[in-house]
Amino acid sequence: MKIMKESKSNFTTVFFDVGGVLLIDFIDWKIRDLAAKYSIHESLLFSAKKQLRPLADSGKISDPEFWTSLLKTVDIVADKDDIDLEPYMKPIDGGIDIVKQLKANGFTVAILSNDSVEMSNHRRKKYGFDDLFDKIIISCYHGVIKPDSRIYEIAVNELNVKPGQSIFIDDRQDNIDAANKAGITGIFFENSTRVKEKLTSLTGVRF
Image 1 (cartoon, rainbow, N blue to C red):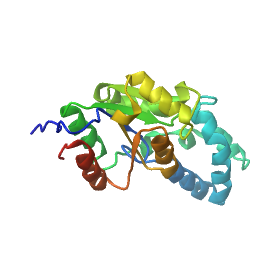
Image 2 (spheres, helix red, strand yellow; image 1 turned 60 degrees about the horizontal axis):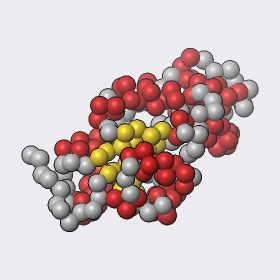
Image 3 (cartoon, one colour; image 1 turned 30 degrees about the vertical axis):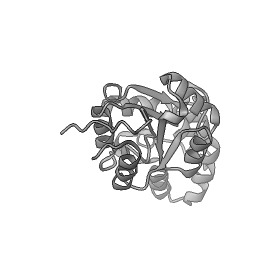
Image 4 (cartoon, one colour; image 1 turned 90 degrees about the vertical axis):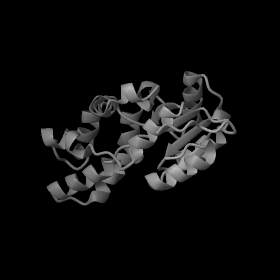
């Protein structure tokens, strides 16, 4: 049943991260699998990830280039399975349902996520994000990644909304802290149940 948001709420817009909020954040999972596959210490790959992933998320290299370069740092030539994303694409319980309920109650819903071109496009197609969300803002298309303050400015400007009217849900505290600093109300994603409780408190929508 559709329950309209209470008039006391000044919020109109909710931004969602993708990995770790709507879908499993699988990069670290895949890195561990690769370390096991090639019998190498995963710390070597995680160290390389810190240097390479920002390049993919800011659009400087492709997602296949990220995985190829990651393995190259340990002298391994990647095969096609090493760059395949599909086996790791899994939704988080309740995440997409939250989006649908907010949208049904008149809220603008948008994605604000760090992502590569290829991974973003795959997720958009597989889960119908372009039909579900009113706007999709991905770091690789803007050359700036969270928690850089500029991406939050881009987000509110793209939707023509004030920061104080916006909520942002993310599973990383540094991204939440940056959103709060920008005037956007951040909700740290622990699980869908806790997020629903916080959203009900802020917006009046019941899930």
